[in-house]
Image (cartoon, rainbow, N blue to C red; front, side, top):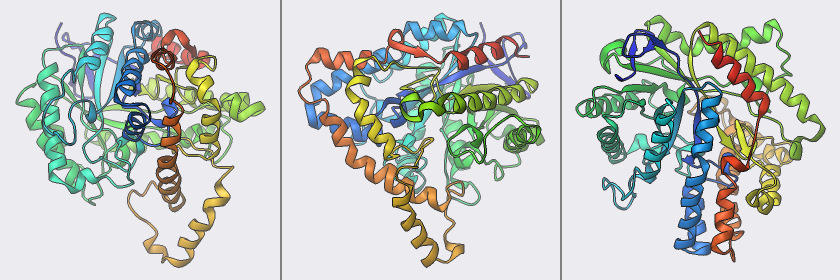
Length: 476
């Protein structure tokens, strides 16, 4: 069986037959994220805090068992049952090298990734390896695992050199694996250079390094500013990085989040707004007759424990957004990867049951984290908004308006204040509190916590999965 490849605007198999990649992001696994797994801050925060609280050996036991259970045979078989054919695997560079021992591949660096790639291949499911976190952080997001609101990756050449080195290691390891569809070089880059110079340069370097080793796999290239902006990409992009390239948009709609400007009812005007945002994001690719891949999209959902009687109405609206986005994609035969496969109940296709050891033990802590709006993703700040508004108002009053707009532009003033103060500062304090809740636990209790994430102990978001299954079975 030959490698999957790009032909013009499509993915095709070895016979030249078009293939539409439909799947989900495996986030929160080899790139742990706070809203997915229930901890505050970044992955490195909680790894350090837990090792300090219960010792390196016990912390390592929990994290290894967590990885073992988060995605296993039950997950891939369920995924296959929906008619989906591709998993985008988010990985953190920390699993491959240590910051204090750079450019030295860790022992068993590929152990977990190999396990999941093989599980998927056994079910004829493609995988896309997504480097979700880079040395120094490619953005100011928690999902870059850097703990700051700046993407320091763009400021230090050594971070960039390590990035290129890591991709040579991944390419060498998977160059003969036909079930790896390709390499998503960098999740949601946020290069502050007005001309995207840093991003274009790193794509140039990484393309050359990978293709000197592995000329077969597809490269999936995100646009700048969180995969939304291609306006400064070079005129020769159709050939600059070879022709086996797909350009990745992330098509989240504000209608699918608590910050939605209005209740979504699927009106003609609202559908037009959905489509206009999607068309705008892929406009550059369409003008150049290039291949588009929607690497992330999808609403978040209401939860009874937080949203009470409003939960069903919230989710009715969110499922309408989901269906209407899918209808747009279906008409374009668009390949997509919905975010997210598994979590603790906010967005996942499956989610950890409230009856598990982990959710019972951390229930009150999770409620506190929600009340304080410590996670940036889909935050509902109604309980704490009044606390941060004076800081926002102070900046508005004292700083000239033209100086209030900083990169990235998709973070408005309020968003920037709360990201720094809540999701970095407050979260940093809460990381130790989370870790201390493990103190006194025996090995079996730690294993029970980790096993809470196993497929067999998860609930399925039935309506979401039904919609995805129907869409996969009617894809054109």
